[in-house]
Image (cartoon, rainbow, N blue to C red):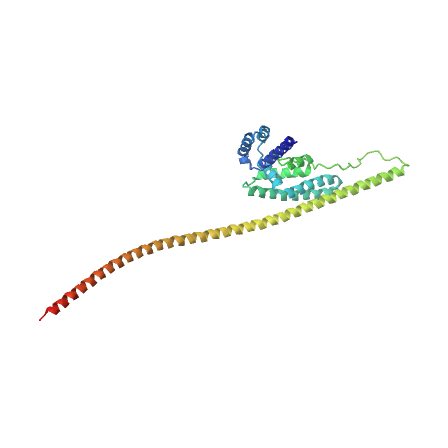
Length: 308
């Protein structure tokens, strides 16, 4: 039992290592991978070392998609749910509904791709135009195709995903094909049952469409809120940088004043020492003059006392 638990913990550990590795920027991916491989070998985990070494460096777009998934888990979850709802509702839409659905997809993909680009910039890498296009194609694929959604949800893409040429519908039953055989006359109960079934399918599809639209609107609202929050954070960051620059300027000015004050202090100290030296010299000269004056006064008194 303990051995199994130990192995399960080790498995969780290597999964966490791989998750972290695939959010490492591509330029540093190989170096980071080899460091992790060496650490696994040192720990005696040869199987883990082989799994880590088998990891392949992602493209910049795939890395940005992985980073988005890990750094924005709530938005990513909503995006995956939106894709599922859209795929389920696709069959229920008419031409106008499909047009609106396409517009919603474009808005959501554009908003989320901008957020991914922002996350990449914060991680130190600006996405090029081709990388940005690959990222948007990947997000479109996630919305349109369940397999692509599953791949992205794993968080370890190595290259961008390609969206299908057509939006892949869900599992809703297909509509009756033109030219199919009509119901035989004289079967009103079956006709009513068929109508009821058709009405139920339409109701279910409408519910799916409503859920998809609600999910799309919620995702767009969440992205707007996130953009507003990021704008506030960016504004606060600018203000903090301005305060830092002002503090640096004040500190430089204070250091300059301190340097000048030290120089003035050293000059004043030198002047003080010279003044003290002159004062000692003057005091000694005064003492000598005073002694000489007393001696002369004594000599004068003696001469005066001996005079007739």
